[in-house]
Length: 228
Image 1 (cartoon, helix red, strand yellow):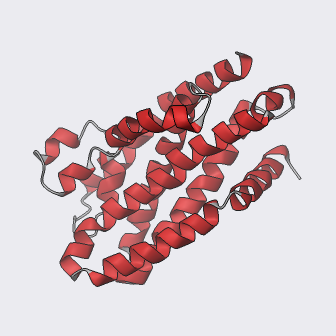
Image 2 (spheres, rainbow, N blue to C red):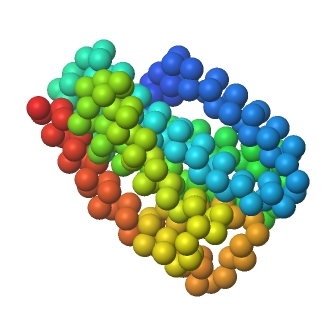
């Protein structure tokens, strides 16, 4: 078994042991009941909001929780002297949490609206959002030593990361949210928004432009924290 595969398996086991999958199952059930209780038009409107917020929890907050747990247990620094590379460490976290977010989102969407071709665009949007949330979570959480210290500033971080949600409800013109890297993934999750070629090019290309610098930022922050 390769180092990355072994790390992926270990991360999945740690997430299961700490109740991440049980929490996700609860959110899936609650989200389905909520969306099915609402009128169809209202459910269609807030589905991308529900999904993006759930992805935020599954990635940004779960990633932060994992790193802080490793710091408390002493494994965070210990890993710096193992053959595990920073790229492999990040890839494992990104992979496990992105898969978790994708499965959760698909279960909710299919249970409420059924299987359709728009699920492909939604799945791509979920993965893009998950990767960005995970990477930002790494870059920010390594500055803190405990979950209590991180919790209050995380509210501001979460607000800024999900700012395009306000555009779904018509708060300010839609163009104002275009510079935000999560606007593209969010638009891919919207059922009632026609996916034209131009819209798809922006929704896919713009977040990808952000992933490289954000990845470099998170990897640098990770190395600094381990060597501190």
